[in-house]
Every structure is written in C-alpha cells, then in structure tokens.
Amino acid sequence: RDIDVHFHTPSEVKAAVTGNGRADKAQVTEMVTRILALQQKPTPADAADALALAICHCWRAPMIARMAEAEAMAAEQRRKYQA
Image 1 (spheres, one colour):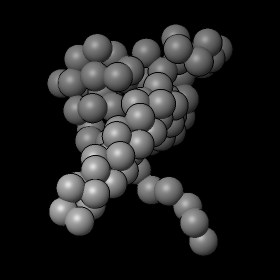
Image 2 (tube, rainbow, N blue to C red):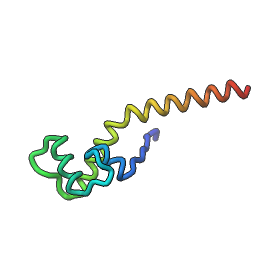
Image 3 (cartoon, rainbow, N blue to C red):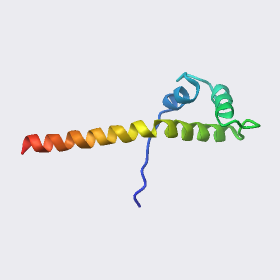
Image 4 (cartoon, rainbow, N blue to C red):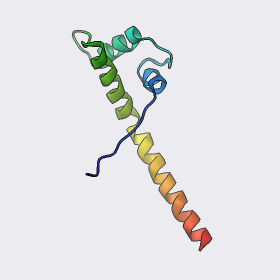
C-alpha cells in the first residue's frame, strides 16, 4: 500500500496546539477542546493526544508537502549537475 507515514515529536505537537512545546497534558487537552469546539474534554486522556497529533499534522501537512517538492527538485538538480 502506498500510505504516507509522518512523524511529529511530542514537543512539536504541543507547540502546534498550545504554542508551548513544553505544555503539560492539561494544557494540550484544554486547547484541543477549544480548537475543535468540543462540549467536553476528550476522554480518555490519550484521545486528546491523538486529536492534538491530528491537528498538528493538518496544520503542518502543506509545509511538509512543499519541503518534499523542494527536496525532489534539489535531487533532480544534483543529478543534472553530476551528469
């Protein structure tokens, strides 16, 4: 299967959602609740982490795609230069 896999560090996810890469679980949960306009905090706590990861990826996906395009173009230029 051709499924992309992406990695986001915990501090990257926390920074994306709260603005602070060292935020605690309560801060992440609070911001996920606000961002998604939820009536209640997600439970269990791991659900908030999963939602925070999804939010982070949605916000960063366009940048990741642009970086992949730039890397492909750079590789092509290197191949042309070496030929």
